[in-house]
Length: 229
Image (tube, rainbow, N blue to C red):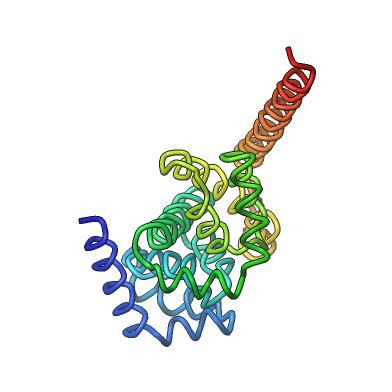
């Protein structure tokens, strides 16, 4: 059942890409104005039926910079709308890639592994050791390929539920970082907004504190086990 559902989703996404390949080429050319001026004027909110699936595809196979669609969402839907729709697209893509690697695409997984063996081994070791914390950390790094993290997580012993919520938190961080870095492209005269800034300040401080707490806790446990307590 799960494999059938994944196969249906892949067929739909493949059909969309073939149908709107000109949109993919515009994204590859960083043609942001084509989306903000032309397509949004034509489709309105209906454009989400295309941009979110495109983000899903990008998280499985890298075809264009994800930043372009994130900036587009922030320009036309505002700060919180941009965050929400970008989060839906990136998380859905990360989940699809994870399930695809773990349950379906054996041959694709082997080819991907052979091309990225050294990188994958390091990431798998880190995820196996630190689990959820490492996935959140890796996904908060904008330059870290999403599909590399997903495939490494699929090959690690991490549980599905842990992968899901670590991916959500990690992608919130990633979108936040990219939104601040690209602020000159989408911020209007009203600015980013204090609520948005305080939200991410609280988010990052909480994450760092949580990570440090568990790191210290794990270190103490290792020291006690080494001393034979």
